[in-house]
Amino acid sequence: MDAEGRHHIITDKVPVLTSEDLHPDSEFPRLGSVPCEVLKRYQDEKGRELVRVSTARPADIESKDGLSEFTVPVSLITSVPN
Image (tube, rainbow, N blue to C red):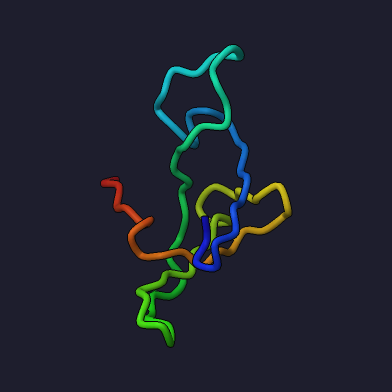
């Protein structure tokens, strides 16, 4: 869910989005993580800490609506060691 409360559907190969062992008979949708690049971190007029991210880099991922940039609460961003 983005900072405005909109849900976005992102599909890709399982290893890109999760380490779960998924099969065709697994229950969907599933939560996962999406590799992204942080473009901007800021506080909005409501005092919320937000982050603008791009999923175009590093993995060229788009939502079902063709979006690759999203503004999300900073709490949704995690760091993954290289």
